[in-house]
Length: 593
Ligand code: ARG
Image (cartoon, rainbow, N blue to C red; front, side, top):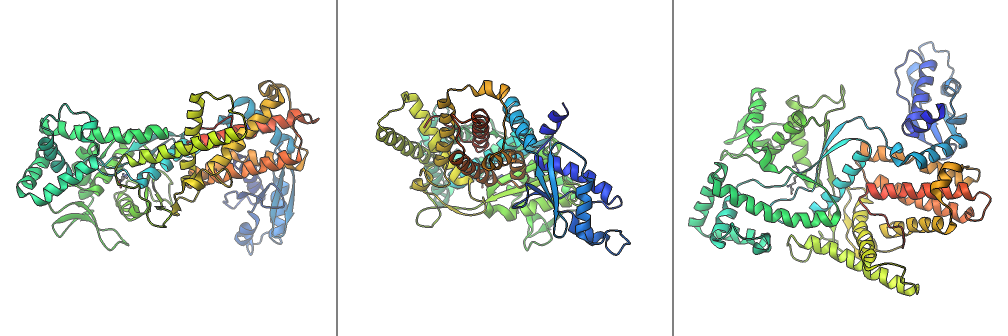
């Protein structure tokens, strides 16, 4: 029972940190210090790096330690005994190398197989988070930037949800603003029967948007009507509210096509939702003395920024920033979120910096030196480039093009699958439906992975050839790697569900040990990806894991060997962890390829 509690209480790093903390308290009782435990590159499995820092704190204060190495020795000696650690050694200026017990690593893996991967979920310091992502604008283009936001935001949401955080997935759609006067009046003019029309009637809302804008710019009478229209809409006039809703519905059904393809769930709370809260929020900021008059507008001056943050335009209207302030107020106070995360392109960095600063000035967010939460983060990302090195554009700028992009990924992966199957002379026992599902899983997965595998801040080049290649660091390669493991298990004719209960894992071969150690790092990896909001950390882990598996499989015979049971369980554990990674990345794993 003792063992059960240590095989499960948090990530390996968290568990070792607890042991190190208790050793530090014994070693230097008078010094406040956080345990520093890292994965070790060469000498051992993990490493404690506290000695040098401690030495600079205690030397010259009459300490009995002679040098950092002596502190390292003491830290090693004072580690409480546990079944986690096999041995320690101290190197150079006090690095404590920690070698994990094979038996414990094996037990941890088996415990996961028996009790589920969820037992490897990291523990995060927040209970509820808002993730604001996708967030396209009504009647405007949903472009690849929104696609990136959708993919990255969904992955972050999945990682937090896996880590038992209550995630509010928010679609902050641009559904409010002066452009609606013009859109509504144009709707009345073009479609006298506008109440009856379905979403197909308007066809491409973007063309509709452009046409109404053209009229607005060239027809004074229409312009005046449009400006009146905004007033009537904001005044709550029934007919205008209904027309507004109609336009939003049409846009929404186009956005939903993309979400459905990507299997992404979002809850829409658009800009209009927060509009009624703006006056009261601005009043609070005003009472705190933050709002000033500048060139007819109402603004907040923020240290370190040349221009102020405009919160009421000179015409008296609210804007993007006033809405974001109200939304943040709502998320903090009504929704009680502790971490509020915004996923947009890096181009909006300044906007977020400024309004986060305003929130700090208002005392909504704590001084980070005192408390870490609640906090806000902007998850910025770079551009998607075309093969010409310029900003990637779907051929026209229509909303539906994003859907077509995904359709193309699917049809390309489908024809490659068909070709491959024919070459192998065996149209695997797939029904049409299975072929459809597999090409979707592979095609959409390829688009997502190509986006997620790079550090999100870098620009990346969109290339179907690259993302659908079965070589290199691609989703297709990883899908094959996973399917191969499944096939090894199938072909063994052993029931792993039964083996995991009756058999045991041993890690005597060096490649088994390396694989085992990497498997149990999973929780740390997810923790790091969540803490730093970097999905590429999970991609990197997934790719490395498949490489380590290959090495293991090349050097360790599985089926028919004396170690068959243990090795099949390692295969199974690798497959389970890979599947969970796919899952976190929003990719549907394929079992047969
Ligand atoms: N609608 C905005 C755009 O398309 C993104 C909104 C991001 N979220 C936010 N709370 N500002 O650029």
